[in-house]
Image (cartoon, rainbow, N blue to C red; front, side, top):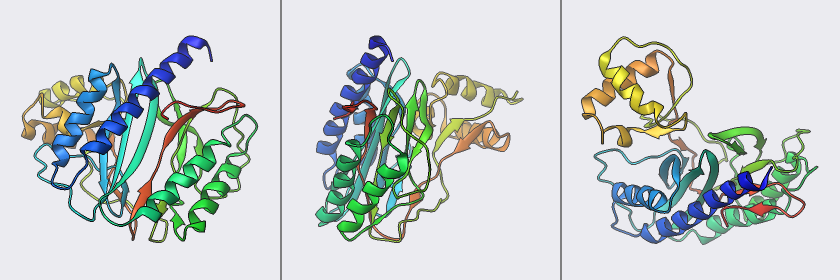
Length: 292
Protein backbone atom coordinates (compact mmCIF):
# COMPACT_ATOMS: atom_id res chain seq x y z
CA UNK A 1 0.00 0.00 0.00
CA UNK A 2 1.52 3.32 -1.00
CA UNK A 3 1.51 6.34 1.29
CA UNK A 4 -1.22 8.17 -0.68
CA UNK A 5 -3.71 5.31 -0.41
CA UNK A 6 -2.88 4.74 3.26
CA UNK A 7 -3.55 8.41 3.93
CA UNK A 8 -6.99 8.12 2.33
CA UNK A 9 -7.83 5.19 4.61
CA UNK A 10 -6.57 7.18 7.59
CA UNK A 11 -8.60 10.25 6.63
CA UNK A 12 -11.75 8.16 6.17
CA UNK A 13 -11.12 6.59 9.57
CA UNK A 14 -10.61 9.93 11.28
CA UNK A 15 -13.89 11.27 9.88
CA UNK A 16 -15.71 8.05 10.80
CA UNK A 17 -14.40 8.25 14.38
CA UNK A 18 -15.48 11.87 14.73
CA UNK A 19 -18.93 11.13 13.27
CA UNK A 20 -19.32 8.10 15.57
CA UNK A 21 -18.53 10.16 18.67
CA UNK A 22 -20.84 12.94 17.43
CA UNK A 23 -23.61 10.38 16.95
CA UNK A 24 -23.10 8.82 20.39
CA UNK A 25 -23.84 12.18 22.00
CA UNK A 26 -27.03 12.56 19.97
CA UNK A 27 -28.50 9.21 21.08
CA UNK A 28 -30.45 10.25 24.15
CA UNK A 29 -33.90 9.42 25.51
CA UNK A 30 -36.58 11.25 23.51
CA UNK A 31 -34.40 12.05 20.48
CA UNK A 32 -35.70 11.23 16.99
CA UNK A 33 -33.99 8.34 15.20
CA UNK A 34 -34.68 9.98 11.84
CA UNK A 35 -33.20 13.32 12.90
CA UNK A 36 -30.12 11.72 14.47
CA UNK A 37 -29.53 9.63 11.34
CA UNK A 38 -29.70 12.71 9.11
CA UNK A 39 -27.47 14.71 11.46
CA UNK A 40 -24.75 12.03 11.48
CA UNK A 41 -24.80 11.73 7.69
CA UNK A 42 -24.65 15.51 7.39
CA UNK A 43 -21.68 15.56 9.79
CA UNK A 44 -19.80 13.03 7.63
CA UNK A 45 -20.32 15.20 4.55
CA UNK A 46 -19.42 18.38 6.46
CA UNK A 47 -16.12 16.75 7.48
CA UNK A 48 -15.34 15.95 3.85
CA UNK A 49 -16.27 12.27 3.73
CA UNK A 50 -18.54 10.26 1.48
CA UNK A 51 -21.19 7.92 2.84
CA UNK A 52 -19.92 4.34 2.46
CA UNK A 53 -23.36 3.12 3.52
CA UNK A 54 -26.43 4.57 5.22
CA UNK A 55 -26.17 5.21 8.96
CA UNK A 56 -27.63 2.22 10.78
CA UNK A 57 -29.28 2.55 14.18
CA UNK A 58 -30.38 -0.86 15.43
CA UNK A 59 -32.36 -1.41 18.62
CA UNK A 60 -32.11 -3.97 21.42
CA UNK A 61 -32.07 -7.55 20.05
CA UNK A 62 -31.45 -6.40 16.45
CA UNK A 63 -27.75 -6.60 15.68
CA UNK A 64 -27.59 -4.63 12.43
CA UNK A 65 -29.18 -3.31 9.22
CA UNK A 66 -31.85 -1.04 10.72
CA UNK A 67 -32.17 2.29 8.92
CA UNK A 68 -34.55 5.15 9.62
CA UNK A 69 -37.52 5.26 7.26
CA UNK A 70 -38.34 8.52 5.45
CA UNK A 71 -41.34 9.14 7.75
CA UNK A 72 -39.87 7.42 10.84
CA UNK A 73 -41.36 8.70 14.11
CA UNK A 74 -39.34 6.36 16.38
CA UNK A 75 -37.63 7.95 19.39
CA UNK A 76 -35.03 6.53 21.75
CA UNK A 77 -36.50 5.26 25.02
CA UNK A 78 -35.14 4.59 28.47
CA UNK A 79 -33.81 1.02 28.54
CA UNK A 80 -32.93 0.83 24.84
CA UNK A 81 -29.66 -0.73 23.72
CA UNK A 82 -28.60 1.05 20.52
CA UNK A 83 -26.06 -0.02 17.91
CA UNK A 84 -24.75 2.88 15.82
CA UNK A 85 -22.93 1.63 12.71
CA UNK A 86 -21.56 4.01 10.09
CA UNK A 87 -19.20 4.03 7.14
CA UNK A 88 -17.13 6.72 5.46
CA UNK A 89 -15.10 6.73 2.27
CA UNK A 90 -12.49 9.01 0.79
CA UNK A 91 -12.37 8.48 -3.00
CA UNK A 92 -13.79 5.01 -2.32
CA UNK A 93 -11.37 3.97 0.45
CA UNK A 94 -13.61 2.79 3.27
CA UNK A 95 -13.68 3.08 7.05
CA UNK A 96 -16.35 1.12 8.94
CA UNK A 97 -17.01 1.60 12.66
CA UNK A 98 -19.70 0.93 15.24
CA UNK A 99 -20.46 1.53 18.90
CA UNK A 100 -23.20 0.48 21.32
CA UNK A 101 -25.00 3.17 23.33
CA UNK A 102 -26.70 1.87 26.47
CA UNK A 103 -29.81 3.76 27.57
CA UNK A 104 -30.54 1.07 30.15
CA UNK A 105 -28.55 -1.14 32.47
CA UNK A 106 -26.49 -3.31 30.13
CA UNK A 107 -22.94 -2.20 30.86
CA UNK A 108 -21.52 -5.74 31.04
CA UNK A 109 -23.00 -6.64 27.66
CA UNK A 110 -21.54 -3.46 26.11
CA UNK A 111 -18.15 -4.20 27.67
CA UNK A 112 -18.16 -7.76 26.33
CA UNK A 113 -18.13 -6.68 22.67
CA UNK A 114 -15.78 -3.78 23.41
CA UNK A 115 -13.26 -5.97 25.26
CA UNK A 116 -13.43 -8.57 22.51
CA UNK A 117 -12.69 -5.90 19.90
CA UNK A 118 -9.70 -4.51 21.79
CA UNK A 119 -8.22 -7.99 22.23
CA UNK A 120 -8.78 -8.84 18.56
CA UNK A 121 -7.22 -5.64 17.22
CA UNK A 122 -3.86 -6.60 18.74
CA UNK A 123 -3.86 -9.71 16.54
CA UNK A 124 -4.33 -7.87 13.21
CA UNK A 125 -0.77 -8.72 12.17
CA UNK A 126 0.70 -10.35 9.05
CA UNK A 127 0.69 -14.15 9.21
CA UNK A 128 -2.12 -14.36 11.75
CA UNK A 129 -4.84 -16.93 11.13
CA UNK A 130 -8.33 -15.43 11.24
CA UNK A 131 -9.37 -18.40 13.39
CA UNK A 132 -7.04 -17.10 16.12
CA UNK A 133 -8.82 -13.76 16.08
CA UNK A 134 -12.17 -15.55 16.27
CA UNK A 135 -11.05 -17.55 19.28
CA UNK A 136 -9.99 -14.43 21.18
CA UNK A 137 -13.33 -12.74 20.40
CA UNK A 138 -15.23 -15.84 21.52
CA UNK A 139 -13.25 -16.20 24.73
CA UNK A 140 -13.64 -12.56 25.75
CA UNK A 141 -17.41 -12.59 25.22
CA UNK A 142 -17.99 -15.94 26.90
CA UNK A 143 -15.83 -14.83 29.84
CA UNK A 144 -18.41 -12.08 30.46
CA UNK A 145 -21.27 -14.59 30.40
CA UNK A 146 -22.63 -13.90 26.92
CA UNK A 147 -22.68 -15.54 23.48
CA UNK A 148 -20.79 -14.33 20.42
CA UNK A 149 -23.04 -14.00 17.38
CA UNK A 150 -21.55 -16.70 15.19
CA UNK A 151 -23.32 -15.97 11.92
CA UNK A 152 -22.09 -12.40 11.73
CA UNK A 153 -18.46 -11.62 11.10
CA UNK A 154 -15.90 -8.96 10.44
CA UNK A 155 -14.71 -8.50 6.87
CA UNK A 156 -12.26 -6.95 4.51
CA UNK A 157 -12.83 -3.47 3.10
CA UNK A 158 -11.36 -1.90 0.00
CA UNK A 159 -11.98 0.74 -2.63
CA UNK A 160 -15.77 0.98 -2.97
CA UNK A 161 -15.93 -2.39 -1.17
CA UNK A 162 -17.56 -2.53 2.24
CA UNK A 163 -17.74 -6.32 2.60
CA UNK A 164 -14.93 -8.29 1.00
CA UNK A 165 -12.53 -11.05 1.92
CA UNK A 166 -11.28 -12.13 4.33
CA UNK A 167 -14.12 -12.96 6.71
CA UNK A 168 -13.14 -12.37 10.35
CA UNK A 169 -15.17 -14.82 12.47
CA UNK A 170 -16.46 -14.10 15.96
CA UNK A 171 -15.62 -17.63 17.13
CA UNK A 172 -12.87 -20.17 16.51
CA UNK A 173 -13.84 -21.12 13.00
CA UNK A 174 -11.43 -23.72 11.68
CA UNK A 175 -10.18 -21.74 8.71
CA UNK A 176 -6.61 -21.51 7.44
CA UNK A 177 -7.03 -18.00 6.03
CA UNK A 178 -4.05 -15.87 7.03
CA UNK A 179 -3.84 -12.09 7.22
CA UNK A 180 -1.37 -10.36 4.92
CA UNK A 181 0.38 -7.05 5.38
CA UNK A 182 -1.64 -4.03 4.21
CA UNK A 183 -4.96 -5.87 4.22
CA UNK A 184 -7.66 -3.53 5.52
CA UNK A 185 -10.20 -5.28 7.71
CA UNK A 186 -13.16 -4.37 9.89
CA UNK A 187 -13.33 -6.38 13.11
CA UNK A 188 -16.82 -6.33 14.67
CA UNK A 189 -17.66 -8.57 17.62
CA UNK A 190 -21.33 -8.95 18.55
CA UNK A 191 -22.14 -10.12 22.08
CA UNK A 192 -25.61 -11.50 22.77
CA UNK A 193 -27.82 -12.38 25.71
CA UNK A 194 -29.54 -14.77 23.31
CA UNK A 195 -28.31 -17.82 21.46
CA UNK A 196 -25.77 -15.99 19.31
CA UNK A 197 -27.53 -16.56 15.98
CA UNK A 198 -29.28 -13.84 14.00
CA UNK A 199 -31.98 -14.33 11.39
CA UNK A 200 -33.37 -12.11 8.64
CA UNK A 201 -36.67 -10.24 8.96
CA UNK A 202 -38.87 -8.44 6.46
CA UNK A 203 -39.11 -4.76 5.58
CA UNK A 204 -35.56 -4.14 4.41
CA UNK A 205 -34.71 -0.57 3.44
CA UNK A 206 -30.99 -1.02 2.75
CA UNK A 207 -30.12 -2.07 -0.80
CA UNK A 208 -27.13 -2.51 -3.08
CA UNK A 209 -26.76 -2.97 -6.83
CA UNK A 210 -25.63 -6.52 -7.60
CA UNK A 211 -26.42 -6.84 -11.30
CA UNK A 212 -26.84 -4.75 -14.43
CA UNK A 213 -29.85 -5.22 -16.68
CA UNK A 214 -32.00 -2.97 -18.88
CA UNK A 215 -35.25 -1.70 -17.37
CA UNK A 216 -38.35 -0.65 -19.28
CA UNK A 217 -40.09 1.70 -16.90
CA UNK A 218 -39.11 5.37 -17.13
CA UNK A 219 -39.75 5.73 -13.40
CA UNK A 220 -37.34 2.91 -12.64
CA UNK A 221 -34.75 4.25 -15.08
CA UNK A 222 -34.84 7.63 -13.34
CA UNK A 223 -34.38 6.09 -9.91
CA UNK A 224 -31.66 3.75 -11.16
CA UNK A 225 -29.76 6.73 -12.59
CA UNK A 226 -29.73 8.28 -9.12
CA UNK A 227 -28.67 4.96 -7.54
CA UNK A 228 -25.71 4.83 -9.96
CA UNK A 229 -24.30 7.96 -8.29
CA UNK A 230 -23.69 5.86 -5.14
CA UNK A 231 -20.93 4.05 -7.09
CA UNK A 232 -22.00 0.55 -6.13
CA UNK A 233 -22.19 1.28 -2.39
CA UNK A 234 -25.30 0.52 -0.30
CA UNK A 235 -28.15 3.03 -0.15
CA UNK A 236 -31.47 3.44 1.62
CA UNK A 237 -35.02 4.44 0.76
CA UNK A 238 -34.64 7.65 2.79
CA UNK A 239 -32.02 8.98 0.38
CA UNK A 240 -34.17 8.37 -2.68
CA UNK A 241 -37.33 10.04 -1.36
CA UNK A 242 -35.35 13.26 -1.04
CA UNK A 243 -35.18 13.23 -4.86
CA UNK A 244 -38.37 11.42 -5.93
CA UNK A 245 -41.96 10.95 -4.67
CA UNK A 246 -42.26 8.06 -2.21
CA UNK A 247 -44.67 6.11 -4.45
CA UNK A 248 -42.26 6.36 -7.38
CA UNK A 249 -39.42 5.10 -5.19
CA UNK A 250 -41.44 2.11 -3.94
CA UNK A 251 -42.44 1.12 -7.48
CA UNK A 252 -38.87 1.41 -8.76
CA UNK A 253 -37.35 -0.56 -5.89
CA UNK A 254 -39.90 -3.33 -6.35
CA UNK A 255 -39.06 -3.63 -10.05
CA UNK A 256 -35.30 -3.55 -9.39
CA UNK A 257 -35.67 -6.28 -6.75
CA UNK A 258 -37.83 -8.41 -9.04
CA UNK A 259 -35.24 -8.11 -11.83
CA UNK A 260 -32.39 -9.02 -9.49
CA UNK A 261 -30.64 -5.70 -10.11
CA UNK A 262 -30.54 -4.81 -6.42
CA UNK A 263 -30.33 -6.94 -3.28
CA UNK A 264 -32.09 -6.11 -0.01
CA UNK A 265 -30.38 -6.31 3.40
CA UNK A 266 -33.05 -6.71 6.11
CA UNK A 267 -32.69 -6.16 9.88
CA UNK A 268 -30.92 -8.99 11.74
CA UNK A 269 -32.32 -9.84 15.19
CA UNK A 270 -31.23 -12.47 17.74
CA UNK A 271 -33.38 -13.85 20.56
CA UNK A 272 -31.80 -11.58 23.16
CA UNK A 273 -30.16 -8.16 23.51
CA UNK A 274 -27.09 -7.66 21.33
CA UNK A 275 -24.13 -5.28 21.64
CA UNK A 276 -21.60 -4.43 18.92
CA UNK A 277 -18.21 -2.77 18.68
CA UNK A 278 -16.25 -2.22 15.47
CA UNK A 279 -13.05 -0.66 14.19
CA UNK A 280 -11.27 -0.70 10.84
CA UNK A 281 -7.60 -1.66 10.96
CA UNK A 282 -4.70 -1.86 8.51
CA UNK A 283 -2.80 -5.11 9.02
CA UNK A 284 0.79 -4.33 10.06
CA UNK A 285 3.33 -5.66 12.56
CA UNK A 286 1.93 -2.85 14.70
CA UNK A 287 -1.72 -2.68 13.53
CA UNK A 288 -3.02 0.74 12.47
CA UNK A 289 -6.56 1.30 13.76
CA UNK A 290 -7.94 3.92 11.40
CA UNK A 291 -11.18 4.58 13.31
CA UNK A 292 -9.74 4.92 16.83
